[in-house]
Image (cartoon, rainbow, N blue to C red; front, side, top):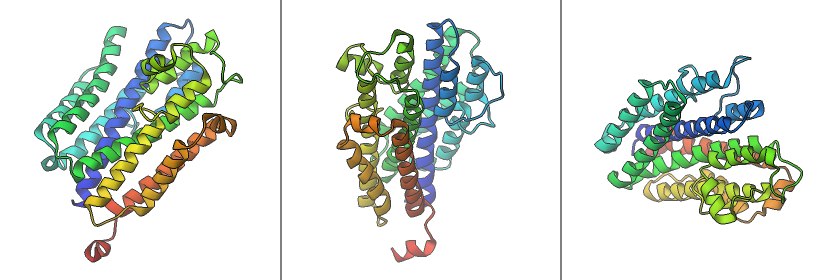
Length: 315
């Protein structure tokens, strides 16, 4: 597969995952506001950090913040910007995807760009439709596309992006960890921890596993080390490792450095205890995960997308 094609599929998947993640963060934040008398300033700051948007004009209210994260074309991580980038990357390699994939992503982009909700009910439906559209695209991809190199690059992009986004969201929240890690959350903090779990699509799964009693240590273990939760860090790292190995088997170019970095991170997570992670500083641990993901991405970029022509001729 041409490096240009692989690069486009990889980044298309990353941008779509980022758009879906941002839509979920905003939707969760809006739902939590309905249960609080006063807006949470700290939560707004966490929303900015978790969506890779680290600056906003002073005095902006929650509605303005949501609009910036949704419609601002100058913000490369806004929902509209991400969907536009995902659509453009897929447009360039339409011959590599199914017609159903292109139609779904194009439909999602046009619907998102041409609709601006006006009331609270329509706002919720708007952000839910973005998430639903991204999920539908993933399902269509899995059922209509050959599971060859192109499909594995899409999986790789999705889970590299999801790992980075999860580590950012979890690390931002864990910077406010309480002193009582293995006790039930205080009532005034309950909604914030519900918000974290919902941001990771994990609230219902957590309740089915532990009941609705939230304890910081349990929540941390669930979103970090649960190998069955699609939005846990361990789950996403396992999928990145699988995709890298599959691509290495299907190509002449082996991503030894990327596999080494991800394999080491995978082993560290698989054999870690949550008590050790929290005792050594959860925020630093999340920063380390993001750093290792960045190393793996740089290796992937160099080996599969930006390699010298001479090395390809030799291979």
